[in-house]
Image (cartoon, rainbow, N blue to C red; front, side, top):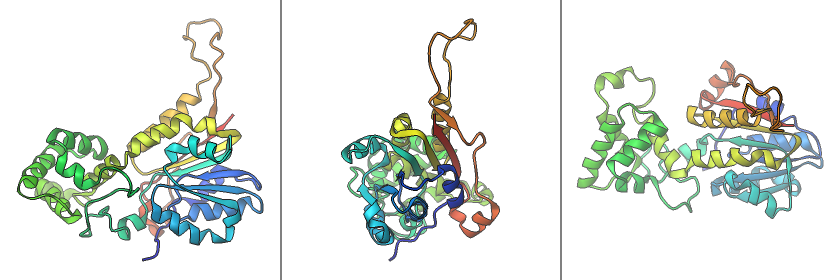
Length: 312
């Protein structure tokens, strides 16, 4: 099956990256390469792209999709959280723009065979990097009831977390939970019928999201990246981040705000003595969301939030 994915908010991404010919840019989440291809077209003929993805399927797809630009592309099978080491290994001190798209690709949902979707009967894997230590099956069958509740509530904001975790533990005592359908059925049966009827999304949506986030350590890796991104940008370099969950957006918003602080002296000091200077400037005071047309054309983009910043 070919790699299927439509990149979210492509026009907005290009706008906020402020692409310049001959410069160096990073796409930290290649996905289907829609963003990467557009970036390469804008920065030619000499601009360079470092394309990163932890999913080997994406790397293999990129070799084909970006073949016309192969002289200007470096593909790296890794996680964007390791960008400092990646750039150091390439003898690059800093770049002119970084794009991170935290979303799940259509390929991962429909073509990876790793159990990301509750609508398919697939092995309960959910690893974006198939070399990662633990699968979703491991978490569901090994973690304690308390640990499952914490994951479901923290990463999925699921109000029936306790009921779902309890039923998972009961079921796995009888038989290991091995497939996406197995898990989806347990979750669905755990939610009261009246609540299921009111929901606009599938009952298992939040639980699958929470497990996926936990398996791939998505929030921890985003925090690691946000702690260091400013050190990897040249002056006037741009950061553009696409998130699809309130917890992700909160991490990005908070870190950009911290780096914008111009003085940390107490408010009653007559003058500044800390010599702190703001490092970045936010380019998106209000989070940017996709328009109605894009949502109609690409429903997976409906929850996208874009934030951008420029290094001073």
